[in-house]
Length: 342
Image 1 (tube, rainbow, N blue to C red):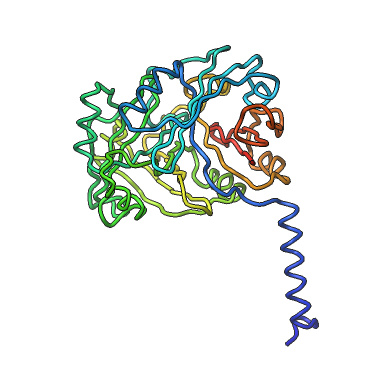
Image 2: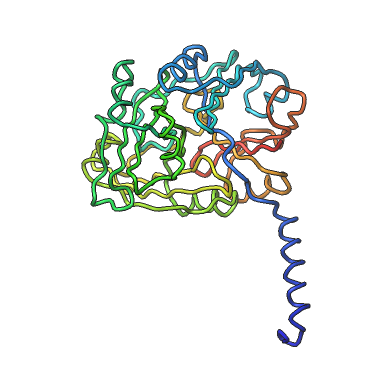
């Protein structure tokens, strides 16, 4: 068989060489979400909340400083305490700035402001989990737990509730019905634990298609599901009157935490990410992706509209970080993304 005058064997070899060239030129996509983290004002207080209320287990704590920390975080003179906590198989990373403490989360923040981000913690039983939160006087972000209706087919039967940690970071507890969610959550519920792990991190985006250009086309995530959420239950979950959301879920090639876009088709008065945000500000979250090798990803991130937080790719060997190299950028909406290799 021939293809435009060439034997098919030579044609296939040519395709293989092109694939190798493209892989070398553009690098490999990220392999997984390594952790999700954010800045806290008091690490000791945060540790007590996440371990005693939500069941996280502390994995490590390190005090880090030096030139590499400054270059990575973009905060001159930074000295930080970084603690990592595990729930199920997922990691939450909390950072306290001992120098150059940042600003608090704005008191008037709403769920449609584009600095909004949360992690969704899966629970075995919503009523029991809500009772634990009430007992610990946790602040509401939703008006109360909501069960999404049949008018939202892709989310029908999901129970969810937004609340806040001591610094005002929004968190979600979520219970899947038997026909939805990763089967691993049903397997973990057999353990008897109430809080099972982190399913996804959700970010508010202005334009889903533009964000797909960054997370799908540049980082290599795949669209795993979509839903149009609206109605009184969704309004009370987000605590935003008239909320109508285009929701898009994305996953990496390996199991783990997913990324979820929340695009508000209504109302459209959500405020943009503050342009002067620093890593020390308490509304700073970062989703950390692991990559096998950096290749030309820095160039691709710039082309995708990212804004640099780090001064390039930083060599972290010997600094106390768990990574060999890393860099932090902001996506087109301002959410921080850390790319790291072992």
